[in-house]
Length: 210
Image 1 (spheres, rainbow, N blue to C red):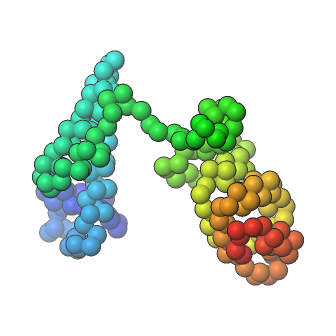
Image 2 (image 1 turned 90 degrees about the vertical axis):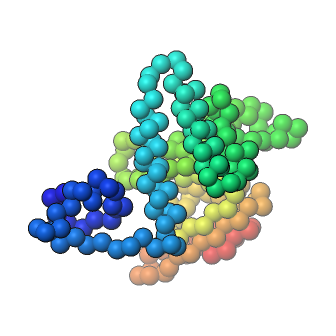
Image 3 (image 1 turned 30 degrees about the vertical axis):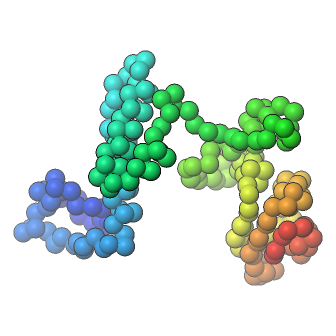
């Protein structure tokens, strides 16, 4: 390794072999017990993703990837002696992802598949997304509306609140709070940027703390 600068990565055997300790200052520290699980699981995530991606293409690729995942789970269970790890985490061979669960005896909508499609955030629930003011890509307004509709609780931490922004989500916020769900908001009155009308509207909502 000859790229100088600061790093924050685990030292693998290959990295250690390539460290020129005579010519370079090598900053390093010991992995602490309290952080080891986080660091090592992140490291393994990358390795396992590479391994999954290396499974040859073909009609049985997904099946083989699932089989590999289950093999890893079984190996882990054997080495930590936890039978529940197997029974609770083995993947179904069909490779399905759960996207919704609603009571059919008291349906929230007449067409549940269409309803789920209309409220599911386009960017999904399990990964982060960076939004900007560009008109290209996913609409921030649409995504926030979908997030409100699918949330159990909402915690907003914002520097200031404008009525022109809140009114866009007025309908969704009213429905959310009236359904018994909790909305908590922390904001400021710094430089008078926050609109009193916006705060008054939010404070008037049930199950809401501002």
